[in-house]
Image 1: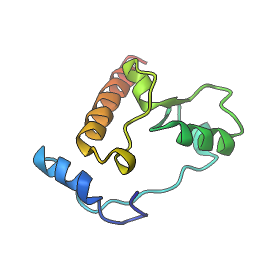
Image 2: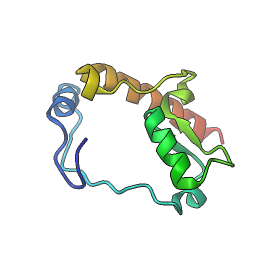
Image 3: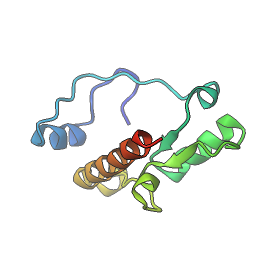
Image 4: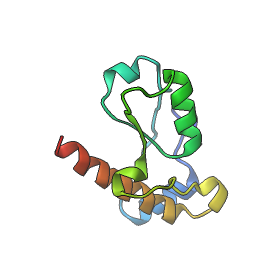
Length: 108
């Protein structure tokens, strides 16, 4: 996983470039405890992230945390290319989850 401010992973870059999606240098920040009070929805890529969020937030009493693909009606994690080597599948999962998340947010 890229560190704060690092370049996009080469496998990810190849998939994005093939689809004409720019991938300039990115920066990220860690989720903070106060994010639970700030945001209505918090999406995670996998169960490990969900456990980390639950520990950080002291549970999820308002049920704000969900797996990204749950918005698409799927009860599974986003395919992790670190283990699968399949960056295309990860791309498809992320697009599917994000499109469904956008649809979910647009009707709220």
